[in-house]
Image (cartoon, rainbow, N blue to C red; front, side):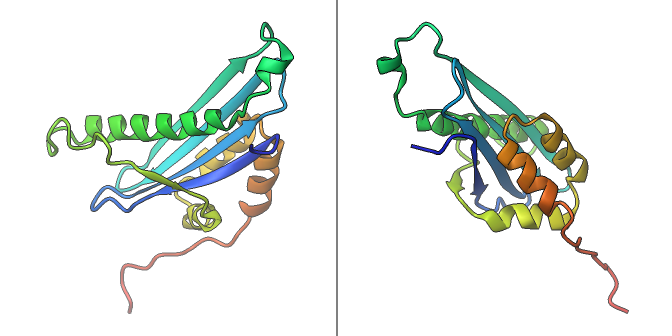
Length: 162
């Protein structure tokens, strides 16, 4: 079972011409009576795509012995929601180029690559969204982590090598 107030980093495979998804998922298994999970999704391509979602689970009317189930199912649901919603956003954005069902499982997340967050911060394309995550997340652990590492040096890209 995940720790209380923890976060996990998921990445997707590189999608040729569409970028790679990085998703941060938080969960608090000790929050009672309202447990939660939230995700913050970043898809870096020519047009930056961002999505966020919070899932609440009210356990106030559930007896304690029943409510002590493994809330990692909330993390699993957040992963599923991120995959579906990012796929839908890509389908809407590129509908003239892609068959209607071609993105049904295009976003397939695998877990835990902390370096993905460092790359995301150092590329500096989502700086405003990272600040938004720091402001709105319920996870103090994620807020502290992002506040600390958002000061990493940023890549500078040069098109011309002269």
